Length: 544
Image 1 (cartoon, rainbow, N blue to C red):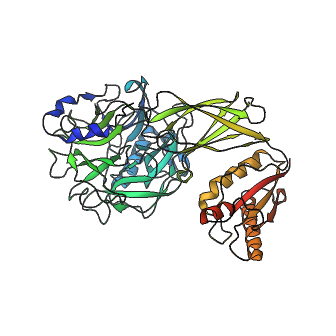
Image 2 (image 1 turned 90 degrees about the vertical axis):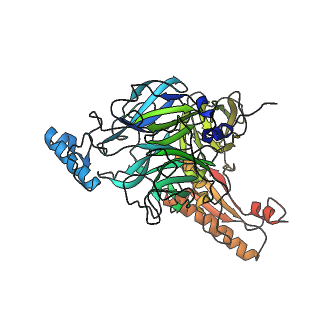
Image 3 (image 1 turned 90 degrees about the horizontal axis):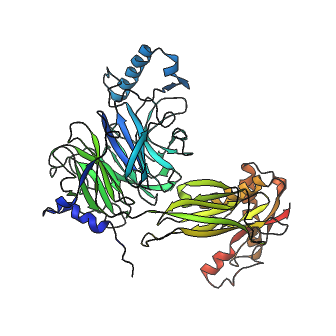
């Protein structure tokens, strides 16, 4: 029997005070990462081979500074630019900043990379749009390995707003990033500029640090996902996690239970120390008493910004024990990959042949809005996905229909090799049904639920990729109610879907609608579960 090692079995050693601290070897990262300037906010990539960090007050920062879409670094002289930047930082700070280059607001994101897990060999300094002359810091990964959260929001024409943004890496090129787009958190505000957050491994929860009206100082809060990069109002984590002092830089481990954070509460040994606690139930407001981690993780200097990477087994953090802020790490668990490589083929279902020139869309749960697209000229593909999170895979090619498959690689399994999958495309033919997952409506109404929008967007993509395709939208119901009312409801639901697609740009004459009511059930309507299967909408090709 294979014995699976869980990092949490080791994590409890971090809080013991009986001599076990000698088992942890403190490692300061090399000098090409740690400079004579401050390095903060270490965020390892999921594969453990990449480290994102922030360098502060470095003279060679990205000087892009947009005002009304005009880059002031290109418009102004060098002296006038520094004076203008000083005024900008002064406005952010609320008090005078005379030397903007040496200011703590001069923050850029850097990226360290290596050939093996945890062995870094080089760094790169991305430019605009990932960095600019305003404070930039990457704070969290997401279930999509190419999407990250950063501090602050950056309006397209220039400026800075409090909050967070998401960015995506478009390729392996250092500067190939999307422009930061705003993350929406209901009722978000913070009284200070000092903020941070962590996202749960499955992308459903944020824990952030902020100073709000119900804070004693800086406190920790939880938000729940409500849509793609949309989150609920922050809820206070309670007065056991939060003390009368500062709680900052949270990190939620892959188990969704263990929370690391930094605090200068009474148990600290001087300045900020790193603490750990565990979530006790599903409310996210009931936690165990936080316990200070052992030396050499904590010291008499400021220690903060913990970030545990299960793939490498390292806990990364920043510390001022050397005078300025540097990045350190300690291996607290054996390496255990959190991502598995998926190797697959796209086949013609009728002939079994490999399909050429196809695209494969792979996405985390639809409510996260995290998706990616890869292309294959020969029908073969490979990519990595995190364990414990269901991913949908959908192949696409003009004149063909792709069936969506869902892959869930269990977090409690150890995978010794790659995961293999075959995806299938069917030729688009008249009277063929387009394979889609179920479309849901409000009960007894023709109002489409937002949870079905992603699947309807996939139908939209099929129609856009095949401009000569025409379809019939067929509405069906169960048998509860008057026959004439059910016929009307099924037709109204089909019409609602047509209107949805028309609003997105599909010509209405490409879609006919029909309501069948309860006439063509898939099941016998003998239970609520069986009746739900009959409440459906189907899409049939009428012309190619």
